[in-house]
Length: 399
Image 1 (cartoon, rainbow, N blue to C red):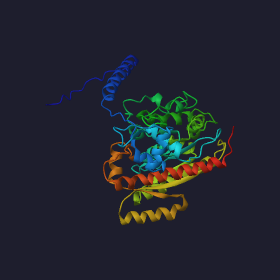
Image 2 (image 1 turned 120 degrees about the vertical axis):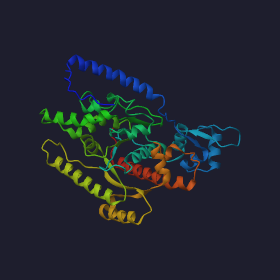
Image 3 (image 1 turned 90 degrees about the vertical axis):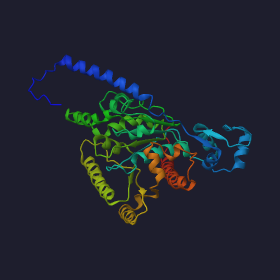
Image 4 (image 1 turned 180 degrees about the vertical axis):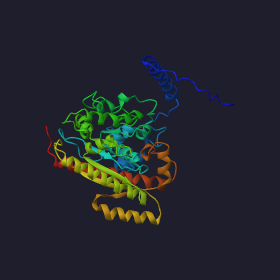
């Protein structure tokens, strides 16, 4: 087909045409959303067989039968007498809460904000955020809020929600960023996972990179753009034990807000030379930010973190990985967590399917393959919660 390249006069666009385009765009987006909603997989909370519940609670079959006879805990369901019992996630959490000695956050003590960050993609930030959030609710009976600050919306997708078709800007942190709301108390939404709420993401979060600088340039000398998120989260720290923030792999205004909102930071890193170099850049830029805040006359106080931990993840069985791991340990010393997440086919497959090993307690494959990836995450959850419990003990309750 021959193209008609004859010059044509461009058609002007006035305000009425722009309004019409906006209306048509809105209607089309609604149609697209309606068409995408149904096929998008809806996640269901997992069902735990009795042997998994026993493992979580640290009890044997005899102890479980004794507690079942007492009638103080959920009985679960079984197809016939003598067969395996199965418990819902909520029922499993009741068993854990009853049988495991878990320190309780005293009234008046604030929850903790943990930001998971690194400027490089592919280092399991989202998986780490999700596993930590699920594990804290399951193993430690904590109430957790996870915030997706990545416009790509991977964390939101993990919850079975299409961030590009189902989420409006008003459901994200954007109303806080543009000043429409003073805090985020109305933002958390319930999810398929008990005691784990979500503030989702959408591609509209890219707009935050224009909104925050615009407010800076409006001339308010007291406006601290890096404290917007922390201020909006403060009222939620009474309700949640943990707020976990998953960030984009970029140094953006949102990422800066996430870092300064945090009480503590977890930095996942893959043991390869490129990731190591990227992490060096991360610390350089991060220290520049902290140093800039320290010298900023408008800053009310210097930023201090409870801890900053480095998590070595996706460790392949390669000599070069061991070498880079040594670099990481020698460089960052006691900041490196005493737990390592291996690279396994199971972990890669679950991430590709937007689920975690906590989503699949009845895994039908190799027990060793499941344990190899599940146990390190269990250990990570316990390490983080133990640190927080120590901090709560040191922090006087404000009643």
